[in-house]
Length: 485
Figure (tube, rainbow, N blue to C red):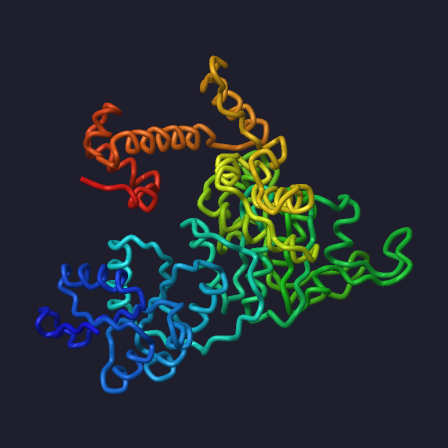
């Protein structure tokens, strides 16, 4: 254990920032960073050491890892919040999954820091924790269900963080994202980790039901309300009473039903079709769409006042092509899932096959990747999946042999652009420009053995330009493995 005298650091608060992590390198990095900033600190290797110290002392902020030998960080969080509820606790973990994030926030964590983290970001978080008022929150609830929402990418970590922060809220949520990104999974997670978790979760795809039936599906109907209505029918609002109603593809809702939904959100009451007695809507609304609702409003296809009612909290799910680092963990998860369903041994991907998947655009996003993994579980001949075993639509061209012509990269770029435009992708130019610069930076640094000044010269840039682009393109973590000047 390392201890620094708080008064020797020049701070007014005699308490120190405590860091607990069984990884010595993480402790060392934070020790150096805190010392450089003049922040008093102590470090610990186990939760047991912290519990001994907190019996006679109190930290200003506690930064703790989740997975450690002995008691976990979540158990330590629970004990610290029980005995010292005013102490802000920042939870960090290399195992970035939804349940960890939710459990941390429900346990009273100040914030959640996924590894690998940027040191400056960690310091800013610690400073904010020291400034903000102490918060007392309820003890954590057990998280018994394994989440299928996985992701190390920063955008996914923001989704996990939001679900954690919303775990004690009934706020209306609007989830946006391309088809196949997992919007319903997120909606179910919001319900599962909410105060309404014990009540029904009811989902309806507003684009999949004929317009003349959708009103009855949502609000129900009285007997005799129309031809064929031979009995009273409870609508989805009644079925979800006390729980959550998930309105998928809300952007396709007909105009007349947009008006009815707006009234429900504004007044909290609705009528069955053919009915005269008002019913109280006791549901939390979570809506989702793959469409640009602001553009739909400009086109006169979606009510602006309804958008404002739905857009209390907005969560954007990134497409899979924006989170290539998540493809490996997702593949392993889906291959194991398919193997369990078929009662066979799980298969695994060769590195070359994984590389092909990482470079594929995945227009169908996570849903498409899951389908591919199930196809491979059934169709691949061996336990080790090679490039040749992949479905034809995702395979790249083999490397040229002898004097075979090399595919013109302009042709490849044109094909990718055509596919993106065909699937309705917006801002495709920005994405392709970013991917082009990422490729140049990676190749130049590989050519120079990681020497950034030399790589910048080869690219015709200045050193500061290269550094700025690495940061803007989110390549910092990836390039830490390369030597630096």
